[in-house]
Amino acid sequence: MSNVTVNVEGKAISVPAGESAAGAALAAGLTHTRVSPVTGEPRAPYCMMGVCFECLMVIDGVPSRQACMVPVREGMRIERQTAVEVWK
Ligand code: FES
Image 1 (cartoon, rainbow, N blue to C red):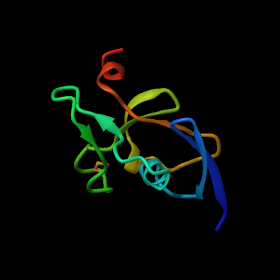
Image 2: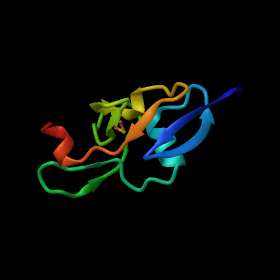
Image 3: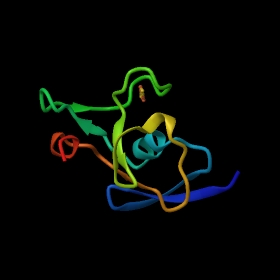
């Protein structure tokens, strides 16, 4: 299986092609992938199958992407989503 290099919160990481962006974020050691715009609490992927929406992240500059449903590709930028970014 080939690997691709993605950028998670400014850190380059090599992950298997076909992995999800959420999987890459977890593999990079992120303990949370977004902050609740309502409570400010850190949130993290839970279902990994597109149901819970806990994995919303900024991917290649686009906010509110379901990271568990987005396959990685070479050079992808994966960033945490904060409450501020939701309202930009
Ligand atoms: S982890 Fe549940 S929708 Fe992505």
